[in-house]
Image 1 (cartoon, rainbow, N blue to C red):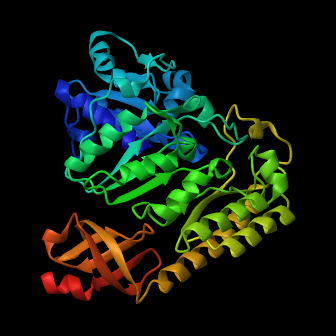
Image 2 (cartoon, rainbow, N blue to C red):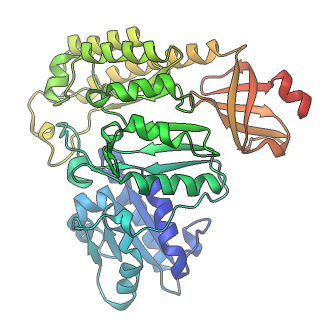
Image 3 (tube, rainbow, N blue to C red):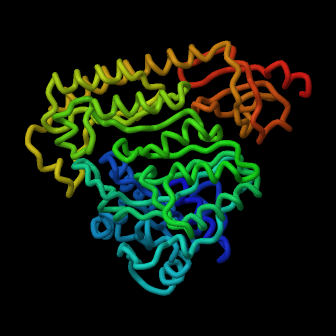
Length: 433
């Protein structure tokens, strides 16, 4: 979502004369668009600000320095205190006012601070997204979260759940398709709880995906991130009936222990998750899953961690984001007893990642010999090589003519690497190559 937001910031600044530079050294405006989900990400903001201050101080002309996103929303006053040289601080719901903020920063002394949740939706004030010569694009359809998991800052930094109207989403998608976009990834903090207003009532994510698949030029649809308890029958049916919906689903479970899931305020048990996976795989037998995991959550015992390992071994994931629990200020979990020792968290994470990496390698190796439809979206590392993404989000390298870039091409997988695949053009593709 931060990638999407950053692109939209560039779009909204373009009419007032700004364009992207290669780096900060020659920039008139530098925006750090930040994430507050983990302590490491938040602390990196301050180290980056220190580096950027040196560039700002060494410039003869004016250089504006801004902090945007969730760290700005959560720690605006802290940024003012620790980095008073920052010119603008604004949250993820107010960047549609960027041109006004830039003008104010040039006029006034001191920092422009805009972290209130505005009454209007930013999407009503943003220009249409541009394809920018790409073949795949992110498209935010939902923001915010009402779940209040005890480890998570999103409800406090992104606000309550909001679904964009169907007409707005469809218009954006049509414009992207006309610009050459072939794959759209629908975004939301809780994307599968999308309830977009339309003339004939509210649409679910399942119905939206089916309608987006009918747009000429759109060949692939993905969505992230999902909340297991909000996967409904219409979405499961879409995985069965909409071939444009890719057979890869990021479905965060966080833990395999019911005790830990309850402490996290997750609204599902481990068995609920297992049953949901069974339903999804029954609807789409070739479905592959990735997930999120937190190890060392307060109160997690060896038995609880083993429950997570058992779940992973049973489900078999093709990818994952896994982290040591990181206390976030203001969240209930930060004040819980039973905080797990750092060394123990490190050891548990290493064991979990060993298992997850082995599963990813095994899945990649199982792809050797298969023919896959791959969206080729740019040059590879070597001359004559193109790079693309498989339906399962694997990077795929192939020697192919440059004119195939931007197309979905059948490739035969020849070699599996830990994080990528190597392929050749399938027989019918070679005929026309």
